[in-house]
Image 1: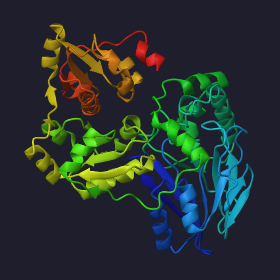
Image 2: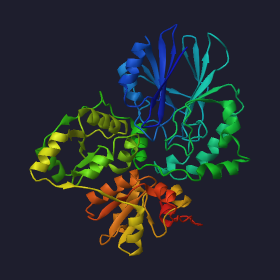
Image 3: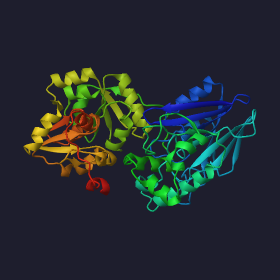
Image 4: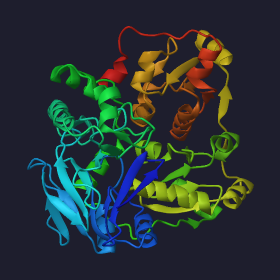
Amino acid sequence: MLLRRYYDDKLAQASYMIGCQASGEALIVDPNRDVQRYLDAARDEDMRIRYVSETHIHADYLSGSRELARRAGATLLLSGDGPPDWQYGFADEDGVQVVHHGDEIQLGNIRIEILHTPGHTPEHISFSITDGATSDEPMGVLTGDFVFVGDVGRPDLLEKAAGVRGTMEEGARSLYRSLRDFRDRPDYLQILPGHGAGSACGKALGAVPTSTLGYEKLVNWAFQSSSEEAFVGEVLSDQPEPPVYFAMMKRLNRDGPPMLDGLPDPESLDAEALGDALAEDTIVVDVRPPERFRAGHVAGTLSIPLNNSFPNWAGWLVPYGLPIYLVAEGGAQAREAARDLALIGLDDVVGFFGPEALDSWQEGGGGIGTLDEITWSEAERLAQDDEAFLLDVRRETEWNEGHVKGARHIHLGYLADHMDEVPGDRRILVYCRTGARSAIGASLLKRAGFESVVNVAGGIVERAKQGLPIERPATRDTFATQH
């Protein structure tokens, strides 16, 4: 048996190849939209992709299952175990096979059993793998977003992200029952999850790539709950805010992800095109490192640095349906950014502006802006003199753990829709945990026309190091509980 794991750090997402070396056939589970990597991997392993499948209708990235199955000439396996009002919209296409709990597929000596494991989503399935060449007992389970290392898949996304009301608590109860049934399986079973640390599909995912059921029963909080009611309360509390793009991913993945036909390769554009882009109904995203943006950037652009958080914040802040232009240090950086955007369905990347275009823009009199940073001592003075508006753009859980007295809390992802709550007659001081998210927030405010915006260097971590006061509220923030 061949088992390969493919991990995308920026999505914190795992795909798997299960292959039989005797028959040369393979199954790919949970591929993302970069489908060429799976085709190349199958070729390198001398495997024919016979089946492609996914554990559920994903919310955090656009599935590559449909496209990979077509390009590989493989059968696409889709769960048919969801409720009537939440089914795949393309299940009747040619080459699609609907599967249910207890169904089995065979790859040479390898037997793969479909397990219906609802909770994270109602249609969720897992894949129990038995290597018949060595044993009649299963060796592991591809658990998708059912069981993670140290956590379980959150059951609230169908309601919070897709807007299907009344599903959150029932999802939690379904998840409890799925875990109750699953825990009776052998402790030696390997747990091969669909996500790792950093994913918003849970709240406490571990960074270790695999585990065993026995170990998870010892340390995973979800297996320790004393009752169903206790589990429901715990699994629904303190979940991170779901990015707004999750709703789009849910809809597209349910109805049929569009075919990409290869990753985008954005063209290099000149300064004249930059002027046109800024004048039209588009968005220009600066993906350079934050220090480059601070030192000098094209006025009216949005800073989202190309790091592991790039797809997340692009999904939060870049509108779907608008042409996208990039400011990048070169073609390689632009291609990487365009690929990351494609993974979440932001496909309309027109091109990029490199250093030469920026130089020409500035030489021609184009607007160049800077982003100032200040220390906490400066921020304290301004706040005490009532010259500033202190804005906290962290998550709700971070705010509730401690914040600066007098600050206003607006999660970065919601900031664009709450600009009317930010005063235009005072200096705006933006902070987060370390200064990274607040720099994005500051660029968003400047793009919206706020002129006096600064980033507080080092964020709340630096404030704590300096021993400055941090308020820990007894009650939750009004904005956070309303959103």
